[in-house]
Length: 335
Image (cartoon, rainbow, N blue to C red):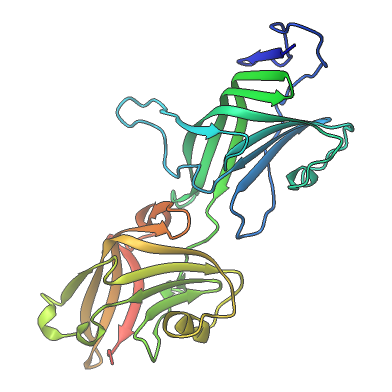
């Protein structure tokens, strides 16, 4: 006979609504931290768990499941949660495991190989998520997001037994950006803007991060006729390509230039973001009898080429106050 056990809201113990004998379980993860599994950088899922003695909850999500934007409605000042569907065989999974021992390590539960002694309950239903912006206390810039995940309506199945969870908080999951986006070095802070010899790629580099620009018509980039009051603007996107990339280790100029115009660098790429909207502003000035060109990025939004996540450059990077734009760097006497 099928047995159903229910948990509603904040109640910690399984109670009532069963029609037969049951194995007693607490299903009480109140006050327990959410642990983030350490996975390979190219992992196709995000993985988290909560532990309480011999019991464990394992949450697996696609990288696109979390939305990197606040769910706070600016008009009503109320949170508007979004829903993540959970299925036993889909990309987004939630599993309740009951082990034969209390000594369950945080990382061992991250393994894709489930302990054969574990009693496994597969979840199906819906999670609701409230997302809050995480900011640097000093600069006020966004450094990531906090996702508050609630098991809104989840049924866990094991044979003919079912556990139903309603409105029970899974916990807070903090996801900080896996990059710094800090290319200004020195005093005053200045990006070290350089040009590749063979392919006209402009880039600025800091450790394992690179911001590169490939202008469609580089030959005429500095043409006098295109400057109005010593200012020229170009749209960013598919024509004039601005790319932000991170790598697994530090880069060299050779690696950057080869990745754009020839063989890929030996260093594996971690993340790649492309500017989908924005403007390149070039300001020309005279210095020591020649021209100097200052490059600024205006109202630029980047999209991750793998996950389709986005971020606005204004939200995460410190802008040049006078220009109200991000200072990309300076080229002296264009060639």
